[in-house]
Length: 287
Image 1: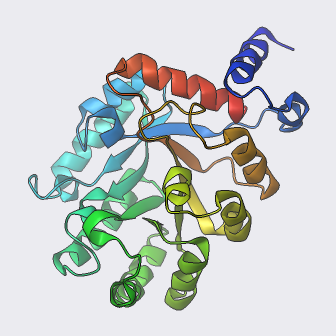
Image 2: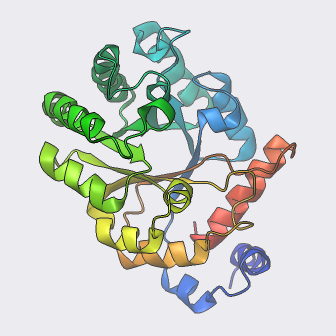
């Protein structure tokens, strides 16, 4: 065992005492791409996110399209060029995009958001990334909202041909169950509509995340968010070793991105905290 692997295994053991080292060895050193959300780096849709990500040692960042205050500024070609050039300068990839402002201006009820989704597809195409996250929380929550779900299905039916043409996957992130997500996907009828899976959100909603991973499978999950609200990864109640097993069981594609989001205790050193989470993830997923 090389020194780096040994150190990672020791780190893993301290974080998850019950981990099966034989299982880790069976992964044959596959490597996941690990990034973070720019808003989790306190640089929501800002160029400075690249420098922060580089100081942490991340592979990439998930970039938010913008906010109402900046006019969803990554729809602007000049802004896109600045972000593209910053990615090249720092060596930090733009891993995927997100429209977080949908939580405040709901896709399910506000028609101005329709253009945001089309424009996000254009931006993703410019950046040569494959995924745009659509956020369904807060004012855009779909739980117990049959009318809202129906509206979203109709809107997605309108936009998916454009996403397909550009080979951009739209990822739904919400508190809905895997079964509810699959129902939406079936009704929309596009292979480019998938689930953006967040283990913490799903568990907080009362869902069985290990059942859901198996039910959705590799085919229906586009990317992952990894978080423990107010705690380090591995220091709360999600069994990340079991998550790793479950992802391996469905042959989760290692070229897909996983992003750290909201996984720090209050007032903890920002850079060192993210580095601790990154070290843990590299151990638990054998990156």
